Length: 178
Image 1 (cartoon, helix red, strand yellow):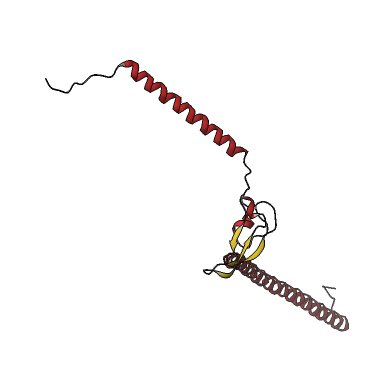
Image 2: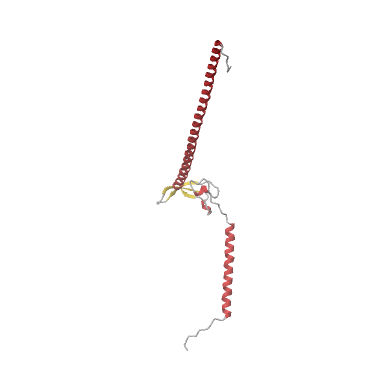
């Protein structure tokens, strides 16, 4: 038929290709396991909230951050905060000073608004308690007035009875109440 002939690949060459693929995959998994073991042994610093938000007080490595001035034409004398151990290649704090101050001020404003809210709630509770005290005082003064009135009426009644009794003895009328 034509000049070109087509033949199926032999099964022996296919198995060699498959074997080399399996070996390459095994090498890849071994290298991956070695890398993950090396990564597991590396020192990991846990991010601390102080280092991430606001003015950093301690670095991830435990050192106290220092302040410096940037010396580039783009940011001349712009202040920054960094760790004195930043050159060792590990993870350390580095932050622009103005950004850190803005974050710190935002945190302070949030805390201040929360404190104002709590103070407002306490003031409302205090007003409610003062109203209750006024109500109890009015009730108590009303009760005192009532007792005073009853005692006064009783004394007047006894005084009247005493006079009636004296008058009845003077007139010779027997007293029924005394």
